[in-house]
Amino acid sequence: MKKKYVSSILTAFVVVAVLAIAITVAATGVTTSATLWAMLPPLVAIGLALITKEVYSSLFFGIVVGAILACGGNAATAVDHVISDGLIAAISGTAGIFLFLVILGTIVALVNKSGASAAFGRWAATHIKSRVGAQLSAFVLGIMIFIDDYFNCLTVGSVMKPVTDAHKVSRAKFSYIIDATAAPICMIAPISSWAAAVTSYTEGTAIEGKGFEYFIRAIPYNFYSLLTIVFVVAMIFIKADFGPMRRHEMNALLKGDLFSTDERVETTQAESNPRGRVIDLVLPIIVLVAVSVVGLIYIGGFFTAGSAKGNFIDAFAGTDATVGLPWGALIALIFVIGYMLVRRLITFKGAMECVPLGFKAMVPAITILTLATALKNISNGLLNASGYVDTLMKSEAAQNMASFLPAVIFLIACLLAFATGTSWGTFGILIPIVCTMFKVNDPMLVICMSASLAGAVCGDHCSPISDTTIMSSAGAECVHVNHVSTQLPYAITVAAISLICYIVAGFVQNAYICLALGVVLIIGFLLAVRIFYKKKEQTAA
Image (cartoon, rainbow, N blue to C red; front, side, top):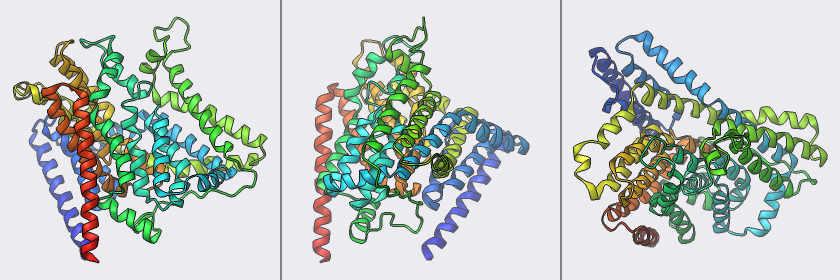
């Protein structure tokens, strides 16, 4: 009770203090565009979310603070910024992703209702016999679905949740595994929407036309993504959980409590149907993946006669995931309904009942995504946070730290992605800047480009307002704040080791030496954690 009272007092103090500062700044006419003030709204939202453990009001308060800073002292303008520039723009800009989420939620509901999920659970029970096996299975499936991070999070979550639940893997741990195999994997996968985005951001720079080539060359230097993979595998085998995650894991293992908090997410239960088979789960996923890929390259102009984007890579570079993913998902949904009717797994009425169920399951994710996107619109669109970062990057101080630039760029990318919640927006800002700082044949161009990509993924991975973080919580049906608080120590550990690797890379310029160093540091750290907790348990006994 005392802890909650202190938290409430602290929250009230922060809210009043920040509002007072924002109103004062707005009233005095101080320039807030492209200055440090542009970073205040997201930082306030993140701080409040971690203090209050409540994400909706925290995000909304961040939006209000940003609107006040941008309004120039006019209250009506501030309200207009919140509604028009924030919320309405967020809904219209991400409507395609909302549609994709609802369709995917409907497919998940259909698979559950048909008994396919229960059938997969029975199969998994006979083939996956340990907690290590359950976690590794989720990890491997996450790596296999590398086309898009949204698709990855929700698919892995719906497929593997019965398996991890059966082996008493906490929802916090499950959501971390999902998140760790979403953005980090997409960032090093040559055929993915992320590779296409990176390629498109090199247009108009010195490496225009060679964007994909430089993306491939940057992969060995993407230390955060690669070391995250090493960290997850090593952590699973060494069994070295630490920080808040340890409490969640111990409660799940010893008490069967998968959440460890009073707040719970309503779990979707798989229905038992004797007709359901594993193929009824596998086939819809295969069709969904295949049709989604076709949808992405179709929107990118792959099938358009005479299009300049007539090859696979160019089509991915020119696609729009907010259109391509709903395009593929809708076709997959029609297939799944038809398939299940033919198999007599469900009735037509039962299939239609799954539509509102799918929407209901995605309401929390859609709400958080709307608020997070609105906050990004305010921070970047009205306050020009990207302009502030541009100024920092091109400062004389940055230029004088040549050998340390990979580490500096990595840190800036981490902070920008953490504050704004967008990795694409972050490397979209930094790649053109990096390309102007180095000559085309300079090895530091590849290293610093990779540092911006790795930092963007790292900040996105840590940020509670990141869409991938939100999708990971939704996929695992984990309380969002629990996912953020338990994941943060793990992500920061890998980030710290990655930073060391980038410092070394600035001097030795050899990816493999740096990666070997990173792997040794990760394994050594996890072994030290295991020894520490083992000694602590022996002392307590």
